[in-house]
Amino acid sequence: PHNINVAKAAAKRAALISRLAVHLPRGKYLRQLAKGLMIGKISYAAAAVTIPRFDNECKGPNSTHRAVQVAINDAARSIVGFKRRDHIHIGDLLEIADLPSLNEVAAKSVDMETWKCFYSNDGGDGARNPV
Image 1 (cartoon, one colour):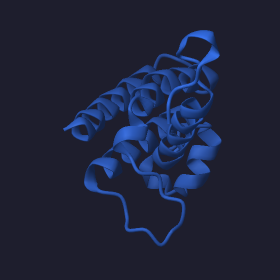
Image 2 (cartoon, rainbow, N blue to C red):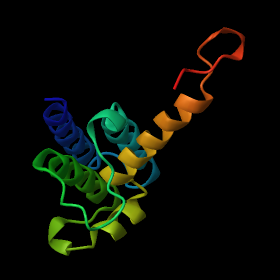
Image 3 (cartoon, rainbow, N blue to C red):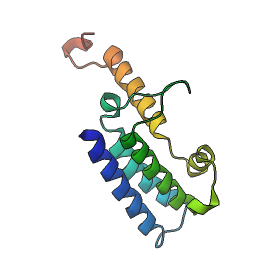
């Protein structure tokens, strides 16, 4: 259920960024909005619900992960001004737009949660979280 809600929210935010692209200059302001609105929403609980892929031998993403990635791609197109009919490679599109893919967000989220397990000081007197 969480993945479905995230996919719907990501699509809504991509549409919002597309509408804002009409009124704001393309570039850093739209990129900042996209990172705050889209990536912030997607990265919340990404470590718990998304499994990062580290090689190409894994099976492809499920439909909700695919929907989230499509929303990220649409936001990236709005930032740089490309259309779907331009058929630009997604890796290049995300690099130009300076947006991470869903897999990159998931990997970073898992890395951060792992780091917090070892180095977070939640207890008193500098005590670490029990692992």
